[in-house]
Image (cartoon, rainbow, N blue to C red; front, side):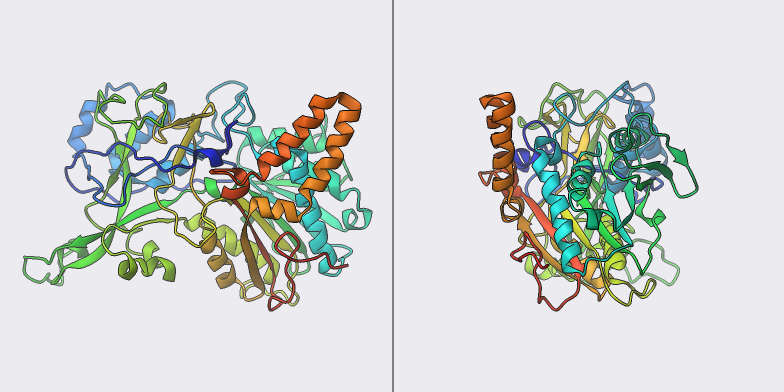
Length: 535
């Protein structure tokens, strides 16, 4: 999510405190929890330069020192207890717990009454809240896809993952109501949301505060205030049926940046001085090499030493020191973990790092992003498990990250109350986000379905301008000036210009748009990506 100053303005990569060296780390992780919402902030960041990460591990008996330690949040205490039992945990497990734990998770277990993560009173501001034009243009984009794909009269589904307050979907639905033929083709609206508090906020906005919400095995149900359409809330997209006759229109705005990542470093492992392992030797492969080799090591999370301060941890000056000192720190395993043995080999782009960069190469991998991209593709283009005779639908992904195919590194950020903070401070109260690997999303989508193709990523500023943001905002600004005065019109102008700002760290430059469409041999480019409206 964003702060009042766009996340994009706070994307500079900074270092986090290095841990002191000791021994090896465990590869154990916490039980998985489903992540159903999104919109994470930016700023702060992790890991400094590209090499020589220090290594920390603490013997289990060392945790005795922490038994009387005062942790900054209930979730921090729970994480520390889990690490005491399992050893240091993967970064992905830490992120998942911080964001979606029932005990003080940022989105699903808030420990502050009436807490709101969004807006000036929260931790960040998102594009739909900056200007209504953003959501209106997303609605128009799906309208153009509906037109281009034959104006299907029934079976259209609107799906949003990570809906936040519901502002984006509200603006989309209000816009689509202006086109009755498309509006009447919609069968249902699905909202993928794990947070009970956010589900309620979305229901109140989209259905009305007095509208009832019922529960079933699938999820939660209510009726849209615009057209009496059914709205279904699910905790995971897997709960939404895949139907080959449906035309799914899927939007993911600032969702992928909230998905947990695994982080790795490529290290040179010296040749083993011991004799070749026997058939019963269960030691790590890294101790059994006959010649020097390059191997991936996973970055793990462990507690900071008792009594740590911002000074002793060298908290960067770019991160606020008004929070308690970080409870945790990032460390590097000295042996292979189950994740380091397969995730860096899951993509040709990752595998190439051994030859193109060598020792010291860094890598962030997001298995959840691959799963969501694959699901989107299967719904649109079909898959061996879910055949679809005629691909239809579209997915639009808007988020921030490299648009040139670069693999993200050192991108973990923490934000609290519109300040940059350590991502390891006050777990559950600090928003976390990472750069999105757009090239990885494209790779996963096209691998999952032969019936889709991918367009973009394209800078958000270019996308919105091609969609006509200047013209639409001009109409709204003129109307605002006439009805509310000059200042109201200028506010509209400032808002849309902020969304397309291409200055250093500007939202129009850092944020990207990517589309997944039915495969058509590239004969038609979508609107906003260089294509024209097809009637």
